[in-house]
Image (cartoon, rainbow, N blue to C red; front, side, top):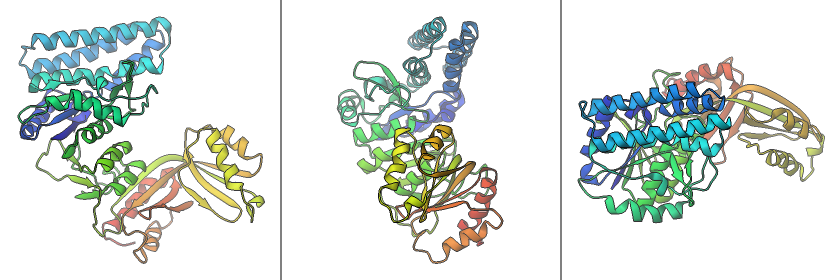
Length: 446
């Protein structure tokens, strides 16, 4: 069997749903499990409705609820030529009634807890899958009873062993050639039956988790691009398609800002050694990228990715010189503050590192200043060059740095796994840096 995951842009309206349905029909001989995101911008609309209700504006929240209801009913009526099946009509009515009750409760209490937000956010996927399952004739499965998670609402952690057992009991019996099974991405449930979400972009993660649990032959991620490109095409219009990627390369690209894949998507597939393909819903016979456990291409550079803004902290102290324990004390501060450190570069008496822009910077600097001198430079960006032969290709580093010309590189870090060379530049210079580096990747030299 295979898993087909369709993102929000692939099920944004009735026309897109028809395209997705054709792909599902073509895959029927392979017993497809279909994992759907919410339609278009539905999740954003649900968040806005919830925030509006929290502010006490019930009328505004219900107006957004009615807009969402109209969009879904319009799609259903289009798909069924105005004759929406009674069962589907009843399901849509029930789901929007549930949304109204939740919004009224939030508005009454003027409180939006993470648990309530997850309950509200889950309605996008539950709505889209009800419509899609009815249109395709697929069996509908509630992911909240299969994708078991802990109770950390908003960023729930899946429990893989439980998911395997639940998928074997509730999904596997429905899978058969000629039969599609439709379920939701992004959402899960606790052992007590509470609704959770896996974080924004978690539908890819859901597809990989379920594919691993069911021993899928392949996980197909259907989106609005022809696979993974060598750079963000909005910045580098002549970005090139990548036919294949290793799991290690894909994970590095995702972690450093590539938008196609949710970073956590990779891990369940790695462990189960299931290939993941990234495909364009509107161009099913076009180019695509296959991500597999081991790909040997011999490419010095596979792709570029960028993430920002980030903050660079440089911590200096003469106590570092020939002294043990300094780094332990340094990183204890970050651990105590719950701050994740990304890049690290060390010298004899200083350490430079990057953190996300939203960290508690003032408190962090104050803690570090108790035993060191601290400089903070905000508004920076990380550019990552990822490739199998970065470290072993003579002269490549010099070509990359030379290509940047007058763009100042403030920090350099070669990843621990030799396939990632990361550079830190000012945020406003990141786009031009990507364009210049891409010329080297494409073979144009410095």
